[in-house]
Image (tube, rainbow, N blue to C red; front, side):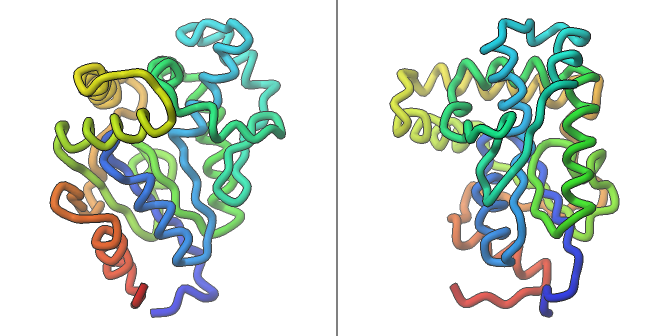
Amino acid sequence: MSTENRHLTIAIDGTSGSGKSTAAKNLASVLGIEYIDTGAMYRAAAYKALKENVPVDDDHAVGDMLSETEIDFVRGRILLDGEDISDRIRTLEISHAASKISQLASCRAKLVEIQRRIASQKSVVMDGRDIGTNVLPGASHKFYVTASLETRAERRLAELLEKGEQTTYEEVLEDLKARDHSDMTRKLNPLVRAEDAIDISTDECDIEGTLQCLLQHIGVNYAG
């Protein structure tokens, strides 16, 4: 099945560190469409709040800040007010702040508005925690990506160490536990599996295998 002349909106939800972002990036690359990392958008908002000393748990203050904020994606890079900050938002400090700021109504309203606008204008692969249930409930394809807590902690630790972050497996494990609890119990659009989403487990599946699985469900043959 060809993807030409089709407006694709592919929603990939899942837990932190499950591999959903890698899968989404690879899928978008193969399909030749835009990848939108919504988690990075919340990290960008948190990054700006920390930089400007705006409390990440103050709904009104964050709303005022975001009313004068532009967040966009260009070729997989996230831009905050026109500046590429892709390499500055993958720290534990930003992760903690993003978890808090993502619970605010003002923040979610602003970013969901941006996400829906982007998806209405072009084909996208969008990953996050409430894409299939809230942001793009009418998405052409929905997936829910998971992996065990231990597998996710090992992956996240390797990623952080590679970037020079000083942390331990135990710290990363606790951070993921806290993030899961926050994502799944927040009042606004918690992380849940959309009823019509297809489950993808990455515990026993490598990057290429995950990509092939996604493509198969979309109906695209790809030899690699």
